Length: 90
Image (cartoon, rainbow, N blue to C red; front, side):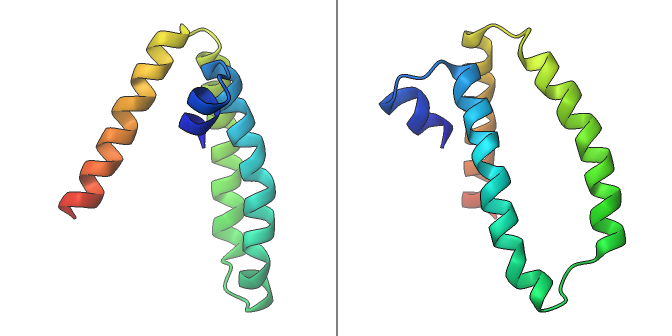
């Protein structure tokens, strides 16, 4: 999503990251519904992860506003490369 927003729509890197994260909220909310209906959610674990993730996400979001756009773009590229290599190499 972020490369599409930055390259095709020419969005600044910080705005693209924020927009992508906002979209994930709705996608995840809709995507979890079938799992809830089937009883396939560990609610205690989900709650614990949500609490920990919320704090980490807030710290990360604040930190990213301090990172220059070029560094953010490069860090994101390295992350995507790492994920691609893991997928290719198993």
